[in-house]
Image 1: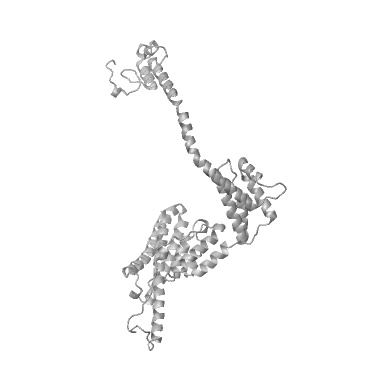
Image 2: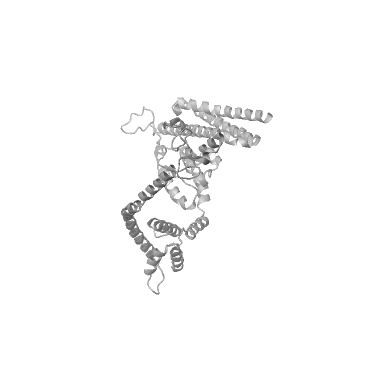
Amino acid sequence: MATLANIDAFSGCCESAKGKVNRIRNAIEAAHLDYKRFSIHALQLYMKTVDAAYQEYNDFQNRIYIADPTRKHEFEPKFVEFEELYEFTRIAINEMIDEHGKSQKVIKIADADSNQPKPGTSGSGPPVRATPTIVLHQAALPIFDGRYDNWFKFKQMFRDIADKYTGDSAATKLHFLDKALVGRAQGSIDQQIIRDNDYEGSWTRLTQQYENLPALISDTILKLLNLKMMTNESFQQLKMVTDEVEKCVSSLEFHDLKMDKLSQAIITTLISTKLDPDTRRIWESNIKRGQLPVYKEMIAVSRNQQHVLERCENYKPVQKGKGANLLARPIQPAVAKAHTVTIQKTDGCYVCSENHLIDKCDTFKKLNVEERYEKAKQIGLCFACLKKGHRTTNCKNSTK
């Protein structure tokens, strides 16, 4: 009981911390996230309160897990909900603080240039500030799952989209970068980096972790060694093998591991062992006697055979249709024969198998009432007319 009371108390403290963040969120939403409605000092105080509430919530959440680990699944969704609330509120406060900073810079520049008005301006209007873009909310940002071979593509695409839009704050970009990390990469950015809104620092951290050249090379070579063997002559299987080989070789060449005669001999031999017998025969017939196989020639032969198989397989459904019709013909006599057997069995006795109805069966008549009832129940007979195919309540026979 003491443990249960402690857990309830800790849960109440968590809700109290959540309430603090929720009140701040309601305040900034009521102001439509307009930084002018708050002083810079008020926003800084909000930031401290939100961070303190986050730490407080974490502490009490950990105490709950320690008190009763079996209830973790019960409180985990609440923590996720609180974390989303915290992230939204903190990002919004950060953006308003940034807007305050930009506004102060504009005012200082305007004061410095007050004696030198620009042509076409009165000099008396309020400073114009750029409206923050919402491109990151709308763009289809890439995701990264922690696989080394996907890192460079993810990094290039994300930075191409995010970095060209200067209207979004570092905190916003960092928020979306953290959400883009999934699978094994989830949680790769340290929480302190997120709290400091260190967008560039997060990229430094990720680069150190995932631009690991030895690990990348090892992972790529293992993929080549573990290529799935073709089970039969198939367009789809040949395409998968060829695509995977080209992807791995391109990755190795991108990192300055150029192809020489030795590596060509190794890779072409490796690929040939993964081909089905018919496809391998075609490849071997294209190698001139006395010459070593060439990687690019092998890929060209594989691609050509892939297109041939694709055209052939696209034509197969018509032939399958004819075959299916031929196979369908013998089915009807089989059904008729089964039906005939059923009729013959229905005309015979269900108890002794002689050629008479069950109500004429001496074996059945010798049974007492309870035994006859169990026998009829076992066979599935109507208790009124002693025939199959219907229940007693639906019996329409006049003879009972």
